[in-house]
Image (cartoon, rainbow, N blue to C red; front, side, top):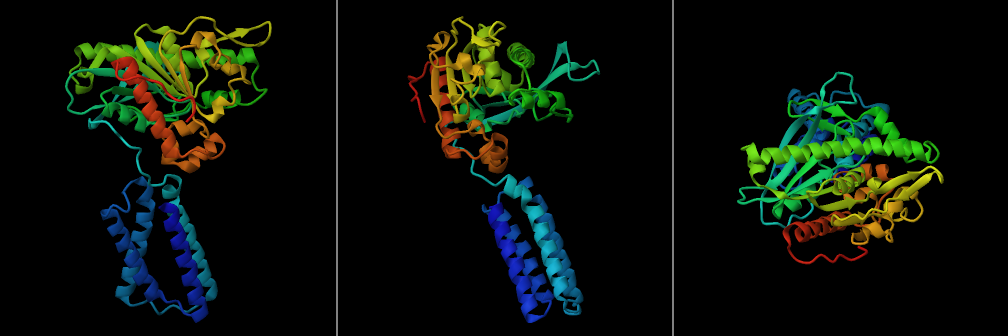
Length: 434
């Protein structure tokens, strides 16, 4: 919608400028009437379903409002034909207007209006956000001596009765807790309490209950960026970074789960009363997926794990003699679903970071593994829907898979897996390739 409106606006500005130059007149009265009517049409589009009002339209609304007010004042004062015609002035005004339109429509182009993925469950979904403070940990990213805090958001069945499995999500290396909102919503609509964690200083941006904003830590961001480049870190050095990242992630997840389990026994908030504390699943994307597998190894109360496009960091062992990673030989007993994009699938046999993910790795012989052909790393999140441009930049190109098919199919698989493992519903037998 944003791109289409920009194209129409640019064509109009260029055409009108050419018309003025050919006729050697300013045509200010006509231009003012057109801009007033464009603003009126924009308001009508907002009232109708054509444009869904959001942040992406704010700058355009301001620009059109200013132009409409200016045009109205000019018409009232009847000063539209007093200006002397100059070709250079017409061209300059046209160029400035086109620049203003590009700027005003930039949010709608970068974050286009889009249809939400389908939700198939019977329950309406409510949300709730909280900030948990861990009094047993000091924040390592600051020198203030404050305790570590973790921001969480719940998606849960509205006006539901009974109790439902708890699912805990961890975002990617520099993601945010809402990265897979369509997944949480779909799960909650089928009777799950889903909580997604913002890992402060690992998340790109997080906001606490009191309004405090926390951005990603620059040193951590540089570490992750360099880890994806050849030759920056030695294998042993990278192994140390992985352990550090995973400790913070799994400590956060353990703290959140323990906090929720405690609140389920004592807190009167609606979301906690819906939780079946005997049925817990964890899942995550990228680094969050790695942390989820780690937690599935570490905690006895985790009954199912979904790994979305991540290496098994918990299963890596650094072998100093060969200066490389080898896979742990301890059997992984928690039910596991792996969902891989092309970005990870192509590394399973060539990158030692994924040595434990190999399909013939005996400790994971009972895991389910599926490959989304044509998908890229962020195809398994909501970002390609929210911002196709940003997703393509971050993942190094556009995916060859339909973005709705990718996320909706992944959501369906995750739902069926948790249904089977946590609720005993149906039979789970996914295809190898989608």
